[in-house]
Length: 227
Image (tube, rainbow, N blue to C red; front, side, top):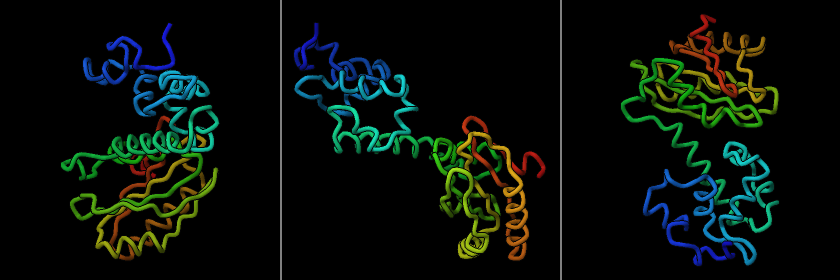
C-alpha cells in the first residue's frame, strides 16, 4: 500500500519520473493532473488529490475544464493557487487548439473558422459574438470579441462591427457566435441580424463572407448552407 508521500513510491511509479522516462503520453489523466497540482496534503498524495478533483465529472477532463474556481475549491486540498493553475492550463489548451499555423491564416472554408473558434466557444455557458476581419486575399488581419450575452442570445451591434472593419481597412468579415444549447441551427433573429449586417457592410464595400454558429459538436455556416 502506497503511503501519503509520493517520494516513497518506486521511481517508475512517480508521475514526474515516469514522464521523464517514458514521455507525457505514458501518463494517465490523473498522473498528469497530479504533476500540475505539484503537491498533495498531509493526508493525500498529489495523485489522490487529482483523482478527487476529477471525480465530480466522472473522471472526464472536459467536465473538469468547464468548472470555475468556486467549483474547483470545493474539493478538499484545492486552494486558490491550485485552482488557478488548473484554470490557466485549460485556457492555454483552448488557445493552443484555436491557434492556426502561420500559413493557415488565410480563411477559405467554414471548417477553418470552426477549428479556430470552436475550442473557445463550444463549451461556454453563455453566448459570445466575435468578428474575424479579412483582407482582400482572405487573410486574417484581426479578430475581436464584439459582445457577451446570456444563455439564449447576445447583442450584435452592427455599427460597431462595421466600424471596426473600416478601421482595419478590411475587405471582408466573418461573424462567429455560439449557441450554449448545443444546437447550431440559426433562429429567426440570427437570420435577420445576418442580413442586416450584410447590407450594412456592403455600404462600405465590405463583404460578409460567412456567419458561423458554433454548437456543442457541430457548427452551422450560413455560406455553406446558401443562407
